[in-house]
Amino acid sequence: MTPADLAVEFPQPEDLIYLNHAGISPWPRRAALAVQRFAEENIVSGPLHYERWLETESRLRNQLRSLINAASTDEIALLKNTSEGLSFVAGGLSWSRGDNIVTCAEEFPSNRIPWQALAERGVILREVALPPDGDLESALGAACDRHTRLLTISSVQFASGFRVDLDALGVFCRARGILFCIDAIQGLGALPLDVATCHADFVVADAHKWLLGPEGIALFYVAERVWDRLRPSEYGWHMTARPSDYDSKTWRVAGSARRFECGSPNLLGAHAFSASLSLLLELGIAAISRTVINNTIYLLDQLTNNLGATVLSPGAERRLSGIVSFRPRDGEVATLHRRLREHGVVCAVRGGAVRWSPHFYTPRRKLNRALALLAAPR
Image (cartoon, rainbow, N blue to C red):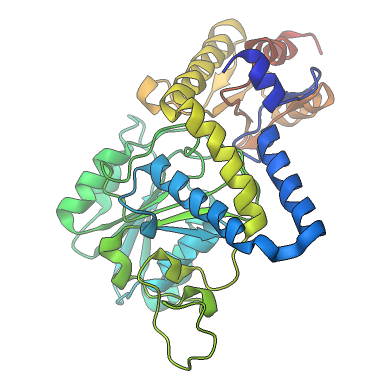
């Protein structure tokens, strides 16, 4: 896809420098057009062609299966958001007093609060700080013992952009019978994730960050081997084995991850999400990841060597993601963030630092303009 093609998909004005894909991403044009067609069809004929809408939802499940290399679309559920999926895991497993869960101390609240809420059931959350040597995997492993039921981790830490070795953690968990849960929202769409090689039991990710989709729809991967270990905590017509049998007074849960979808599907979101994924899969996640990491390497070099900023993101290439966090030389994060916004740079403040997160389509000239603002006199 040429730069001209990308400009068609992302027709952002030249004076806008969008560096907040770790927050909420702009849609590609094809997603907007998909929603427009869906809306126009609703105006003209309502749900007359509902079966075709369900075909789009089915295509979305298959796109997600392909994206994470799941064994089957039966392992893919479509939820509202990451928090819902993580809450399903926390609320659906059978816990015993004294069980513990291991995670990183730098997690986003979505991957902390559901586990903290289990304290009333006697479940302990062990939060491991990122060690100075960066070997988070060993530190997490050392925190596990015979009472550890689950290890839950973000594929990429939201504030620093630290990238976790999911394969290493997955092998560790599988060898010890520990369930492995991944909050993939800060990596999926920018970095590869293979649920087979990392032995994931659960993966959750909203559409609205690196996946370039809308809010209100999310991937929830549940490996078939753990379906029966996770009790549904929401109930409705759609999660049954025969959802179209409205008259029967008896029911059983669906023989797939659809058992976690209690009610009517978000078909509007499915149309937009499927369109966004079609772009990512067309380009290939491997190619997208190379561009994202190259952007990160370039920004880290400029910030460190030319601008004297204090970089909070990791330095080792295998730890890099699409997130670059830094503090300016004078340390005035809030002032810098305000000045960047005034000059059209959309970014965030996280963990006491400015956080930039360009995607694969962000042109180098816009990165250079954002960097120039750091060097410009106040």
